[in-house]
Image (cartoon, rainbow, N blue to C red):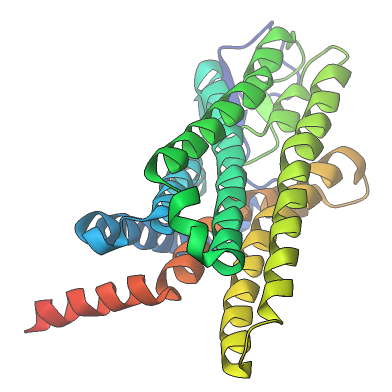
Length: 315
């Protein structure tokens, strides 16, 4: 492995990930919460998939979307965290150019899918609360499948330029990526060319995809909150409001770090690099950990089936 920052080469076949620059001495300690969160994410999301598959009564739109979210969380975290842990534990920093671009594509495409699924779930909650009698006729299984397909196609298409542009640029200065995974802007910053197109496309994608999703989620939950205040009893209002607040917390846990990290990577020149990398890395793990808790454990049907499963095992 080369440790040189100025190697004469063109388009290297291998990149070197530094992990969290400036905190190399603390990599072992940093790996503990990362590993713990990853284990919780795996356990929580696989449990949701298992329970929904096993229980026919849960085969309805809300839980179909929840399963889509669980799969997305599993793929997004698994595409990055094992490599991060290998850096933290074994100093295994090398990654091939093709693997780097593949990781980049998976991270951004499944992040966009996650955003799209949250929009679909917000729409489902809007129909369930504001138009409960029409819920089963509007969100049929075929409509849910079409929504899921649209989310996947949108994410795959909008993410495709990331690795395409990254492969297009010439790399002739260094192959050392000061990051824990192949984040698009961290990779293209190594190019010895004008990367304005990559930077502008990243901002366009951030505001056109995530920005529009935030807009639609805001509209849905505004309508939901208006409907809540028209519920007949205070108990019903508080119960529904508490559910909405927990969902909004999960949504904010996805969008706030994403917008913060993307913008500060480009414009936050005075922000310490290790802080930016740490935020960008944690961002990949917080939603997969929170979603099974907020959408799963706090959902009455999932919680009931989970308790029933353990109860039968004990007896």
